[in-house]
Image 1 (cartoon, helix red, strand yellow):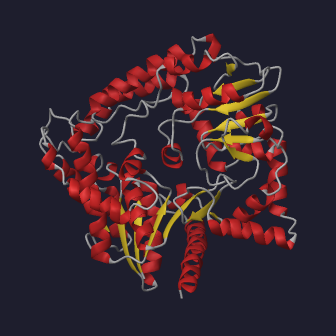
Image 2 (cartoon, helix red, strand yellow):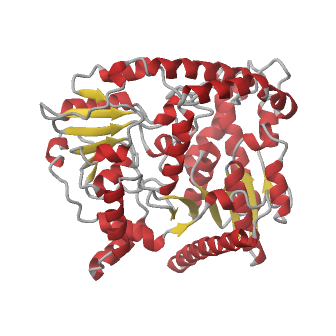
Image 3 (cartoon, one colour):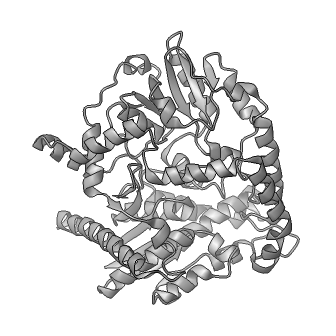
Length: 520
């Protein structure tokens, strides 16, 4: 079997390199394509050294975007309209795009599409023809990989950015299995998705149906639900680590220290490592530059100080009457960009505020990550939300687990809080298509049905969904596996890596074999 692996930055690259190494030893043909700019534009190529260490040959068994960005930046700034092959773009869309348009795929990528959020560290030329030239070149690159190698399957972790989206679109049209190993937001489990995480995979639904028909007690699910209710912890383990880091990062001292590093030590690495494709004094297309990052860091610091000065955004008391908990996302968060038709949380909040009965409140809490680094909204973004008459903001440092237990419902575009709310017996409203959308108390928002759905609190299939994830998921220490080729491991750590890789390989092989049987 010929397998394409799509890797994003270091952790994914090293984990997939080890998986490719194992599958290659079993006679499969493998090729890893690095899908991010960072490994070629801002490093000395350490990721590719890991590929070589895994015994992979450059060109034939791994490739990257080095020549892509070099060629892109040779495009003149005044590229005319006829510099874009519009006929090729239309032909590609007609040939491959079954479910999503080309501009859908582009909107999933915060690097090339900045119209829907406030991350402004990249240089996006005013000449929009360069945007379409980027898309054209990316389509040709990915289509060329498929034509050259004739892949039978695609394997990746998560679903970051446009190259993976294009590969998924081509694989879907060619009926080639595209397997994405992603967190299912339950404990430390990762699940294989064959639908790019757009909703619940069919094989998970089939396992749920099997469990229900068998009258299964779902012991793992019951234990997990009881633990979550008692501990009021985040639903999935990685978020706990993230929250610890965010607590440290939101301090003013940490932000000032990071800014000092950015103005003193970081410029040296920029000069020595970063690629300057268009010369020292001209910014590279769709790539970050030192000065834009510095500007956004300073702006983020100002916004963060200003946020804490607005008392209406820092309320510590929960609403006294019934309320819907509305946690905001980190924007641009890839799951929101990819899994929803909108990331306009102000519009979602406006729709919900009109649908609720009188006397109900919407309790809004921003993601603390939006108070760190360059991913910040202007404070007016939040102040505009707070002007809605039935909206109350909560202190971003409050833990969601302490809020959900008191809420009457939960609403979010596609956030984990929806699943946590279902576990606590709270109905949920979503605007996106999260992987747990099959849970019957998590509803696609419809203003005509919202009031009736507020009464729908007890799920009939939640335990089957959670148990299906336990039965079909795998446990991976991505931090360990993602660094296992770049550092020496103890014998115990290496044994742990092997066990986890064996489990992942077994799941992938079973999935692919099952698909073969169905096709036969």
